Length: 125
Image (cartoon, rainbow, N blue to C red; front, side):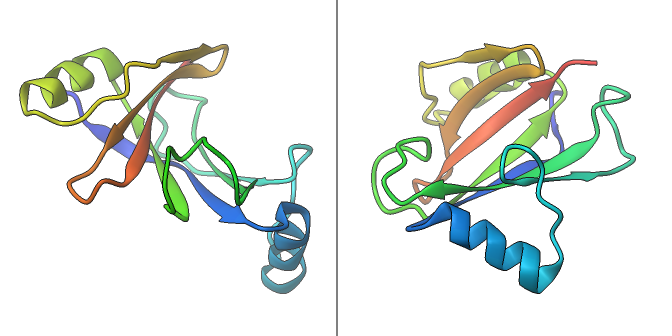
């Protein structure tokens, strides 16, 4: 059965993403990367060599979380995106028809039972 293998990222809205990330770096010691976010490495890697959790701030008017006032979006790492989407579709889960393929993996979006948009990510080795 396809499954979630970890949290791939946490994304937060902010009226001033630069100041927001600076506050987290200054007050909580989060080391920022080139993309003005952070990557936390971890060891439960599926596939091997892909283990990390991203952290990033987005502007208040971002459409990346979908429409509405959702303040955060969780990215879940999955081991077989296509199989999981097929399973979710059969259970009546809302699935965004948009897909995104990047050199670091495949992405899709769904909504949970409260209408929160979630990102699913199948990383590549």
